[in-house]
Image (cartoon, rainbow, N blue to C red; front, side, top):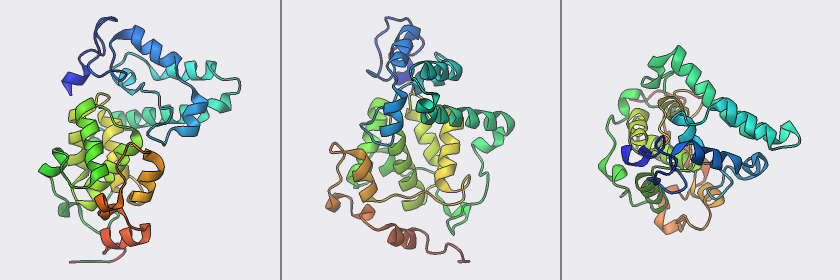
Length: 254
């Protein structure tokens, strides 16, 4: 991760390690902040080509505060409600940080039991080599991994897909996946990262998060490979996926 963040808090004229993601200095952060459009963000944030802000590295490394980002968003709209969705996402980041302060043990231990029909001991403790290398054989998943490793950044929706695949398709512990993200993300934050992994896993939510190929195609656009024959394991209905991934949900197994 260090290669991606080295320029974040350096001189204003420092060359960015990752263009448009981690340009260095306060001046660069302010330039990104002034371009934020809360209305466009609310309308398109779930799409990989949507109006995401790319502010997270600057917030994570203390170049920008949540307070000034919120105030800038409010100042950019006529009606405060137009910034509501954007501010809600800032509130989630603040929420994760407050949990971290009050319950630091929750960052690496299950808040609750898995709600998948499997016990924690049934999840692999180490990340499989093919996931780390982006060689799973599932085209869209491998593209997400390549983007993460090569750029230090991944859209939030792609993070959710990759986390879900790791935990639920491969039955790998969320801790192993969380460590992988922390090693590569330019905005790597233990609170937001790890508690989000727990939400995906169902150890900090009321059910596991899963997705299918139709959902990937809806939000990822033409640059992500969603040809069914290259993504067969994802090309299922949600009902069928639930049966395949969680055959013991709601009952004992042994």
